[in-house]
Length: 159
Image (cartoon, rainbow, N blue to C red; front, top):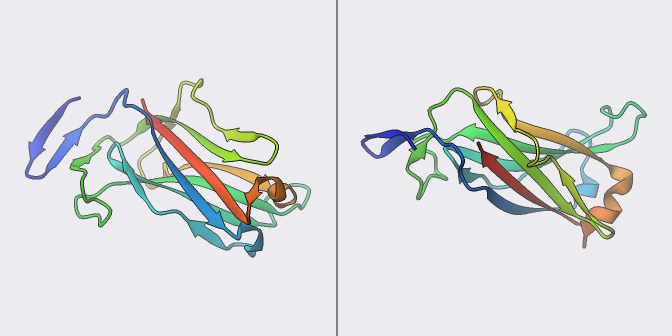
């Protein structure tokens, strides 16, 4: 790691870090109306704040089926973020390369979106490089919901 100390803030180039993961639950996603969104709390990792969100759509699928967008967002951590209780580092790079997985357990299998086998995705400057998106069909949600709750594990690695 390279860095320099500036008061409480330390600029660091994050490379080859261990992965981070967080698990979130979204209740009653099957009741979301078009355009409605639910967000997880933000979690700090490698100079960024990350969160998962879900949003209902009826105009995204070419066949007109309702979908649930599953998003992984990132935004640059700032020195005065309320979430910033224990971290002291802010990544100063304009672009970062990252790998990710969004993992959803279902009644029949574990659905995994994204891959660690790929070389990673170059994310432009935040917020434009907010993260990734995938979509689930509402028709298939019953297999993913556990007592009406969608469980998602997000795993991220800055490389």
